[in-house]
Image 1: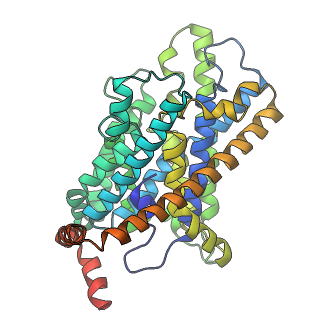
Image 2: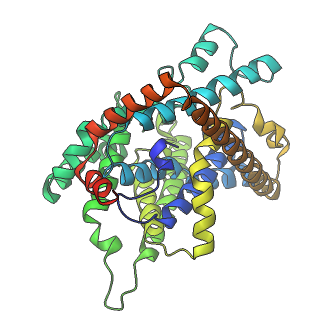
Image 3: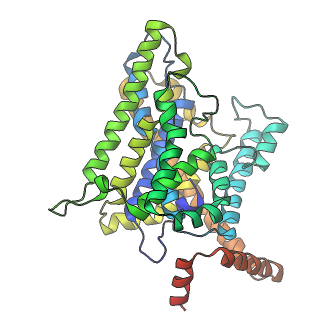
Length: 400
């Protein structure tokens, strides 16, 4: 879900296919989350009964809730050793704007918009998607990206101990504290903000720069510890589900803590973070067969399009019922519905973004034939060179 989630090259090194695959898996998880949540398949936790279908839906939610943090980790991993680029920022903004306006207007004109008033606020959201929070994740990413000239330099020059203390203090303030206290903190944004993105960004930067010994160190048999990362993921997800059901039982028994029922399901909860980190490290170290790596490499740059399509304000509460969410009653129907939603939404999103990229390339080629456009590109290129980090400069010089 971001420009550098699409940019999957290390500076001067080969592509990491495991993270391409993880990006695709995480996007599928995002589709599941929005199908269950906005399709109204997650029953009220304060109700007397959930039913087998309801419990299954919440279990699926618990295993997919890591998707957002996973994307943050991927972007932080690559951005931490990359430089700020005005060109990349402009391309990302244009991509978001085209989806926001195009599909938002389509939804309004066709009359398919539900649960959202088509008023002045609606159109302001379409035309100013970042500032109006049309896609909250992208707003958080863009604001963090604007800080990259400062944060990136800091990360590249910080020692291991400095990063450990910085990350530790941030995680204590934004994750651990809210995870252990039996109350709601007024400033807790539940992970829906750029500050939490910064926390996860720094964690990913640390993993890239120093690694995590108990997750990535190899034993005497030179066998990588991917299994431990997966264990962290599955264990963390089960703790998320257990916390959810535990708080529900406590609420039904005491009538208290209603505001905290879904706390273990929030992005900045320590259970979700642990599960996300485990999955990220497992896929980062994954050895992928060449054919699968090639497929992932081709598809991964278009994963953002899946998000920008199905979460557009003109469609975000509509497509679930098109795919039968309002007709699901049993567990097999739920599983089948989730699979169909993932396949249909993911495929449509990828294909539409392929077309979008093709059209963008045509516009760029035509624009390069005009003097004003070429001048603009030259100005942007010079601005990018101002922020180029040392590693990129060395790679650029060696390629001449």
